Image 1 (cartoon, rainbow over the protein chains, first blue to last red):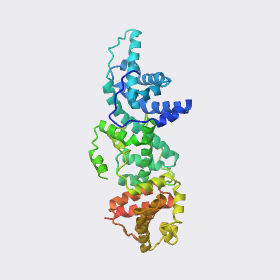
Image 2: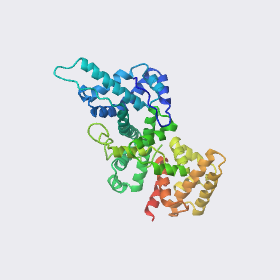
Image 3: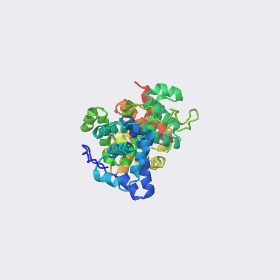
Image 4: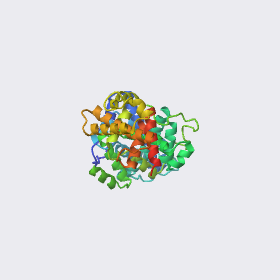
Length: 240
Length: 171
């Protein structure tokens, strides 16, 4: 991936988790690749569907092709670290290059009757779009991870109450009657599942190469990209 | 760790059927609201106790606390706090002793014991005597008790949950 590094305006990331896994050899590399495929397949597909390159193929096929071509490259992660980009930006940058490669390849060997349009490049916009899609991707992955943890720990009802309140937006009074518990107990059970979700969310950032001390800044950065005003919270923190 | 209300879920299927991929229907508004949850709020002293309860074998840790200061100043502390009844004045004294230790703790372990004594005494006074023995704002205390209940083991989770219920019923 040869794009010039885009300087991040936010605290630098470290790559402890990824370094540790890569140092473990093949199985560690597989863990890192699995994390990337699980979290990023969906935002890359959504991104692809929003481009004029949709004619290149089915989103699933294109994204899997990208993963196959890049994640097995011996220097993929070393190049990323040298570059200094956030992992998601490195991936979307690489994905744009991959689409260009596919565009050229298919233009050289056009299918009968098809005419390839001019390639459509938008690297800067792609990074902005990727940040917004990554909010959804991270939260979805964290929900899946926390749900599995709750099921494994016999906290299925806790999870369902968390889901009804925090995902479904229902008040505890209504949820409590459905589950036959006091509203306060429902709130306590939701908090248990909520903590699992928060741990899962922060773990995903860690697996993405964000150092523990930079996770709050990373979340704030993404929320600002989504147009969320955090001034009130930040003011409260400064007064602490 | 046993958590409040952790009875097996038999009435409901464990996984919500959302059709297709899990959480495929999530909106950007839901996602940003849930992402925001990942940002810690202003840190309070009670958060140190919550973290400790979540990180350790909290049942064993709390049992060991009951044999040391300040809990050892309360006669038969385990039964007095979790089953009762304990005298309100004894609970008040335990709360005050816990508060003093938190203000000037000789060690981190003593600091956490002080916090545990403080909140356990307040919760027991609410549950056993319906008495509010602190000047903390009720809403703030209710939230702390809920958070403690969400990570505390068995009988301790019940104590904190029932105390939070008392506050939710009071004006």
